[in-house]
Length: 188
Picture: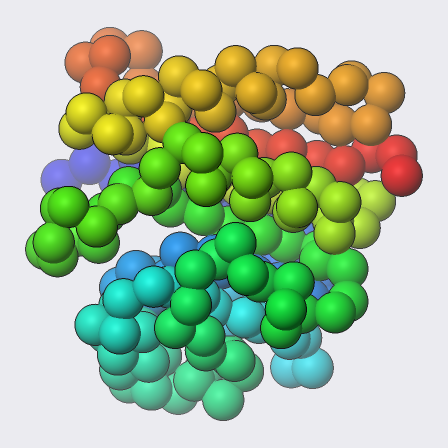
């Protein structure tokens, strides 16, 4: 069993921020594992928003969080994550995204580069100074490969005056292995 994977890397790097964050967004809640991580590790008064376009994903996530007794901390939205600012008026402290398709779901329903880049632009505006955006990208399928290339190009253009950006990937795995990006807003 592999214990060192991109999701574990993401959670390890985010943990300190999550523990003190007030407003958090899981922009692609999928089966709920990131939403659960945010819920279990956050302040009792933290606001957590979870989005997915698939009702199945929202249902799976709600079930997982209910089983763990932390569903009360989350506001759920079955909507495109691009619309997050219609629901969240405050600045964000932590944002997490797992790109691609719902595991064990319809692989034709997937995130795409144009929407992801537009979402990223909106997120960076709504992000508090000191806030973090964590993105796990999956280049192992056609849409994910294109999305990852465009995302990486976009992230490299962010001004180091305002943002610090890092990426992590398993260098002894295939070039289609997941890639983790972390963006911190260092100045407003």
